[in-house]
Image: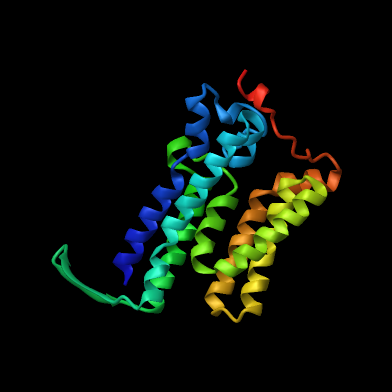
Length: 226
């Protein structure tokens, strides 16, 4: 099983590393690493370039996470695949089915989140993996993600802090996965994803504690055209 995991890990990383925030901003003549919070995520793109660009980046970042984790869908359909090939004079053979597909999906998701945060295409700079992680986990634990989306909306509209909403939404995922009796490794990956998102928000946490975190203010359509 090592070869399939290596292939999925590499593909997941490269998919996650696609710097959509940087590319969308660059197409409008903006270096997203030099403006706003200097983060290539959807929030900063939306703040700097407006709703249309921000929503596009949000959708693309979520899509790459979903694609990276899409192997998990094969586990639900009961697909079974055998492989048998020779590499470096050694015959490699195996069978992928059932829970193996779910493990491959989780591997793809983890590597996509790492790729998004540490993209090889942008000198290992990147975003905080909220949208990418949410897109991937939607494939694996869709109900928990929908509950997390509600948590995000409630916190955001109550506080206007995107960072706080994102961290609390992420923190809800392992809890709801556990309450819904998901397998232990799924609960574990949800918890690890929440921890990773929180670590990526370390500076935001510091500002929240100091009372200096910026509330979200969307750029108007008129300003975004300037």
